[in-house]
Length: 229
Image 1 (spheres, helix red, strand yellow):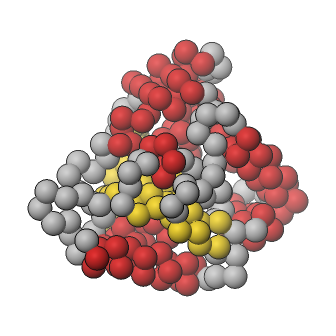
Image 2 (cartoon, rainbow, N blue to C red):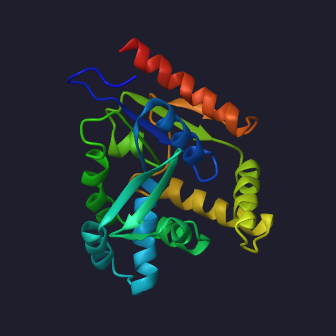
């Protein structure tokens, strides 16, 4: 199920934290042989650099975003790793403090502009799936398929709390829920590239779904798009 010669399918998957974007997109990317980019990882990488280097000024953060040696590599078996040069930073990017800093730096227009080209050209001529907050509205507004994954705050907070606790981070559901609500408000309320569904996006509410059901729902949408082109 690869692209016909001379065509390229871009699948944009947007939605708030905890909606299941990452696990769903990694699974379908592996199934359909798609290039995959978690766009949030790019912003988290900038957030990590900001924390490690003590960067606060918008111009310094935009410069770091433009120059960082970031790559997102398939590791096999449906697994992907984020790298700065040869340093794998996958685990670092999952830290809550990095996520918080990423949400802050992603609200800076110059940072977002610095990262647009990388995202739009990702995968070269291959079919690709990108997940994030504004892929369908800003990064790839001409994407062939746009999906907006969402879920209730309660469901998303519970998923994230369990994920973090499984990694040994001592967080409470109340704490995670409060942080997620604040991040939702920040991401949805920013004037530049706010989190919202594209007008032509397919809305998929994963609240009542298991991970497998979410994956199969998105896989069905992709399969239909590939079959019809």
